Image 1 (cartoon, rainbow over the protein chains, first blue to last red):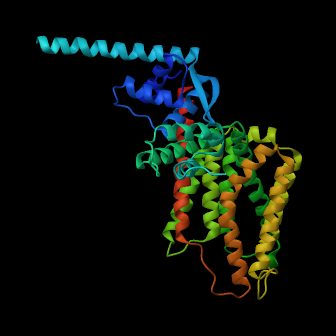
Image 2: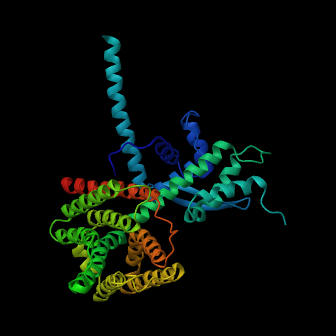
Image 3: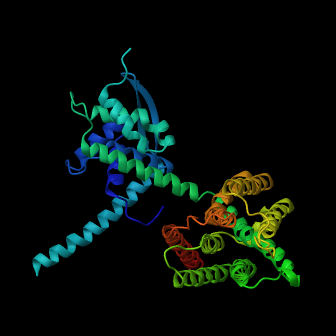
Length: 109
Length: 312
């Protein structure tokens, strides 16, 4: 695992999958919901990210279905994906705590 | 039976931006997601979606390319390349040198040939002990030849000189980005050495000048020269594929082709001039552009190799 900060779309995809396995379109709509419609993933970006996350073993395919003659694949968070998401959350929380403390001090000064 | 709707057809067309492997794995799924996220009745993809597919596809292609470049066979191919170029040129040089020992055939001005060849031969010898220093020697030699080239530059450059410059830059990448000549010796068989020496000897014999009106006995027509050059390249290529592990050989051919192309162009021009065709097309100055890219790649490879060794 690298020490680099996770990119926001990656973080949001992993967060979406932390709720349970989802298919591509489900991830797209969930990411929009989590980010308050600020991040709207499009298919090209989403599937490039899913491919990369699969190759890094952070997510995996849960199951496949055929709906209206089209393939629908469900993705799930792997244990190392959950670990990476937890590490990123802790990093963000630590940064946010420092920022909050300093802002409080600034407001009190 | 109806085919896919126009919107689906257009999305599928845009998916061509992705590598074939990615399309096989995710293509159907992506079309489904794209159609689900497009409002009913729309016949054309949204511009933002189209741009996203193209940029996403290019990113995926770049990832596939960098994954391909970092596969385990490249270091071996680079190691063999660091030996192959100098050995071939050394063999050619030896033929020329021996020929010049015969007083009747000795020609002035051959230092043009010896100097770059020695510059290519020297670094691998240094690399047996000091690989990265050897890469720096090759880079310095390339810089020197560039300086010579640019100082005499009018409008056109000589293909042979271009070939040497490119070969030296490839040598920098080969030495800095691979385990070096010792690894090459482990990968190559005696048959590979034979192929390289034979290629060098053939080049040397073809470059022997004869005193007389035409100087070279094989002042061929351009198409004949092209056939000879292609046959030579095919024979060397086949020899390498047959005597090295195939993935290594194919990568080596890609590397060797880079200096071989300007070299082959030069041979054809020379043959054309010897055959009395005075309207030969000189090697264009635009050839500097890929060389510049190659120079940057060489410098970055060398820098990374040094950086890594300092960190280790």
